[in-house]
Amino acid sequence: MNWNALADNVLAGQQVSRAEALAMLGAPDDDLLALLDAAFRIRRNHFGRKVNLHVIRNAQSGNCSEDCSFCSQSARSQAEIERYAMESADALIVGAQEAAEVGAVKYCMVTSGRRPSEQVLTAVCAAAGRISGDMKIKLCVSLGSLTDEQARRLKAAGVTRYNHNLETSRRFFPQICSTHTWDERVATVRRARAAGLEACCGGIIGMGETLEDRVDLALALRDLEVEAIPVNLFNPRAGTPLAGRPVLGAIEALKVLAMFRLVNPRAELRAAGGREAILGLMQPLALYAVNSIFTQGYLTTAGQGTNRDLEMLTQAGFEMGQVEG
Ligand code: SF4
Image (cartoon, rainbow, N blue to C red):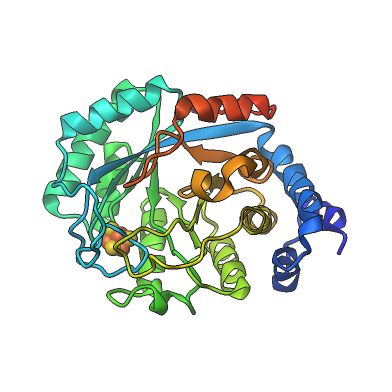
């Protein structure tokens, strides 16, 4: 297939078909640079060479009632992680200051658990009110399932975006989680958007799903018109049910990122968790498809550090994004 012609079609406003998206994932490895070039033409058209840095804060860790088999924070996981109750609003504000100091455009407060308790919501809203009033950084939160009223409270407190990942395709989801459904996750994304919050919604690649599942996740996110898509590259955690999964190859992961860019041309596409572990020395190539990365690590694992992230993106000819608005 002519990947450049496919990029031309996307730039002209056409949508990539399911068959075309699948063809991208099945392309020979020798096509990798052509796939990334196609992705880059779209990325450059909408976002130039800017890379938005996001900082994620694990505000409440572990002891989650849900059984997501990839997750070290499930109460059923034996993973050796730090488990702690909800942080105070003051601690969350200190985290935001640190994020702003490294030049992050977004600070994302995340809590484990199926849905936020009143204590969690109160602390997050208190922190959000002060951060949005005092600092030049945008706020995203990820607290699990929401009611309409909770979504409205977050919006009123100054939160701009809500994260709730679909994780994988609707078809594969029951194989990784039995305590809630994919449709419940979609409902929360819709609720957040109805309250005026942008949607950050992505998934995890490499949990044993098929190429069709990867494409169907990308297409579902296009249907939901989400503003941001974090693509996590599965980095199996000891002590979880998926600990023994074979890991993705870097080339395979880069094809996935290119496919997500062509299917969702205007979304803020993020190389999320697993970037360092899965892409290794190939990390800079991801920037040709994505326009966002997490820096300063992830929920329960460390990253390579902001200095190395900045060195990587500037050496590759990219520049840091700035807070808009
Ligand atoms: S709901 Fe979230 S914190 Fe809980 S097990 Fe699933 S992914 Fe982990």
